[in-house]
Amino acid sequence: MPATPDTRHPPEALHVTTPAQADALMDFTYGARLLEQFLTPTTASSAAYALNEPANRVTYHVCKLRDCGLLRVAGHHGKRVQYVAAARTFHVPRTLVQLDEPLTVIGPAMREITAAYAHAILDWQTRQGHPGSGDDLTIHLGRGAPDTRTDTGVFAPAMRMRTVQLRPQQYRAAQDAINDILDRLNTDEPGETEDTRTSTFVLLTFKGQLHLT
Image 1 (cartoon, rainbow, N blue to C red):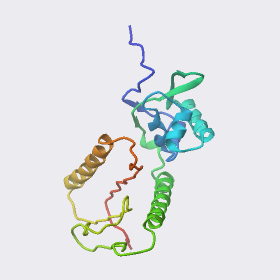
Image 2: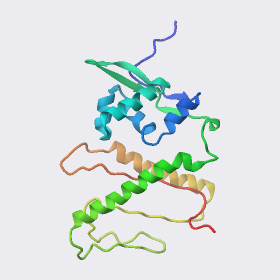
Image 3: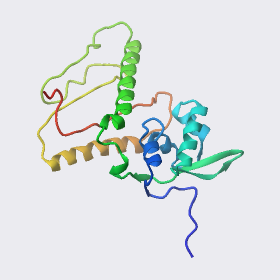
Image 4: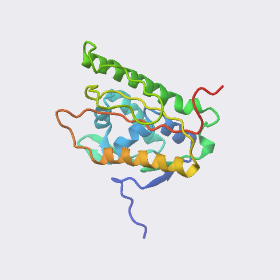
């Protein structure tokens, strides 16, 4: 007799089979980012609160994810429906992703990253107040990290780019090392305190270089 499916905990993996599933999953704002709120049974309104998004908009996209099979009903909290993600990992066939038009996939993500980073810079400038010593914009050339002893204030935005020559194994090892740092940040979270703020780190690596002619 087959085991009864556990509706409150998602299985480890799901293979995407339809264009509707692929499109919903690849939606940068309301795909995987929204599904991540449902790793445990959650209501649409709770997900909206966690993402600081309008409840009616999130509910609309929750229904889309449910209708295409990426979310499942896990129970009820009072009169509200609780949903859980259909899996923790989704495998999307290449035939369902428009990789021949990469900007279709990454364009929305890059635009949101750029806008959020620009907003963070403006917010930092406002918090710093009138420019004084230590408020310099630092542009560092060559190898080695810049001097970090200068007081740039709390939660100062930062960008660092480096073009290097690597073998395939070195490239993968570098990605893994940075991933490990990000994973530790996630598991070592101190929880909400008076001085904690939501912060974002973006890992972006690729073969090639900028300013190709």
